[in-house]
Image 1: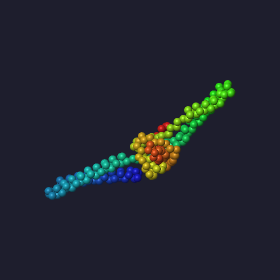
Image 2: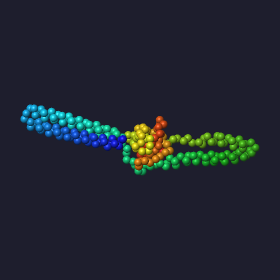
Image 3: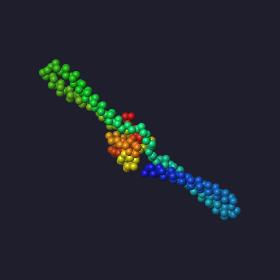
Image 4: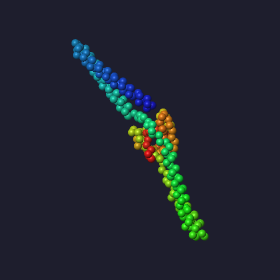
Length: 215
């Protein structure tokens, strides 16, 4: 629908501008006819026609300016940048945080065991049970959700499917922060990212119109 409006509105504005020029030329021609008229009735008729043509010309120019203003505020998709396809980075950035935590927990246990062997009768049982209970909760890292920010100047549509013809769920203003979901797709030569709004609405946005928080 937006693409059809972007095509029809400039054509209507051009037609209105041409009509304004046409009526303006007719007004000047009626003025010369008014000066050449020899009777008062003919002069009054030519003067009336010239005023009507001037009013029509001004009205046509105003309509053309209004249509151009509407065309300027109509959202239009930008040309996608071929190099902006970072789709594999979210899967490679998360695993290192989970692999380092077990290595630290395993490395601390052998360091405590030699100190416990000096009293083999009672201390080994208390040390082996006490160390995992105090160390394991502190090694669990807090995972923060990955986010993106709308970065298109005027905003972008949140769509139900990864294409420009699917249902428009919500108009996202420039600077809106969204939560990144795992799903990605490619449609109509555009990379699409599945996101979730602060209100819980799930949809798709084109990757060229967003900026990832970790980039």
